Image (cartoon, rainbow, N blue to C red):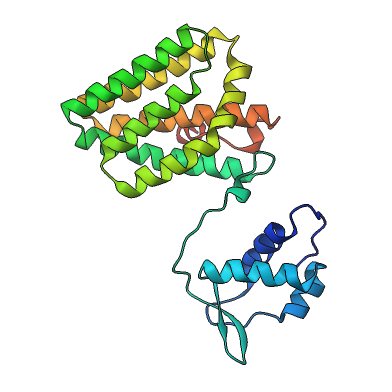
Amino acid sequence: MLRSIAQKSSLVEDAIRMIERSIRENLSVGERLPSEAEMSRQLQVSRPVVREALAFLRADGLVESRQGQGLFTTAQSVLRMRVEDLRPDGAGLLDLLEMRRALEAETARLAAARRTPADIERLRAALDAMAEAEAAGRDGVAEDLAFHLAIAATSRNPLLIKMIHFWSALLQDTIAVIREADKADDTVLRTRQMRHAAIFHHIEAGDAEAAHRAMIDHMSETLDRFRAERGEGPAAGRSVRSERNA
């Protein structure tokens, strides 16, 4: 059953999310969707809004039209991430940070296993650029992301590289906000520098497991800072470190 959409500022995006959630939670592959008129009634939006949302879901491969029969769910063959799902005022960005922690940890593991002397020089230069930016009083966000992109390139995995490039642009403003809040805290700055240095040294040494653990710890710090900026306490989500040590 679909719930009505309360906000009118982004009707199509909201309709997409509501219909997609209902499909994933309530329908199996091959089941028929309600009619446009019924979905319009349940969502309390116009039929053109529903029609546009369904066109998007068809392009995503989540539903298909059968002539004279209506719309049916399919085994999705296309995965598309929408920027609208990652708005900083919603939970989507927290989901992205959690996914980033998992994937970047594996990226660091692969980088340690596959690094070359040329890779190590690029990573060292990126690490030095980050330290220089912070010493000069800049936020160092671009240099931070460049370091992570260099690790991705070292992994030699084209899918991981694409994913990390995609979310780096999305995260830039959010990381800048976190760093602005932290800039007066020397302890936070030193801890961040130590985390980055540890990741680099483990990759340089070819210690894949240590690189993986170091990236998990670093990403967990970022998650903790983001939750703090959102006013969420420890109960809102435990870090990997606390889960491991519990």
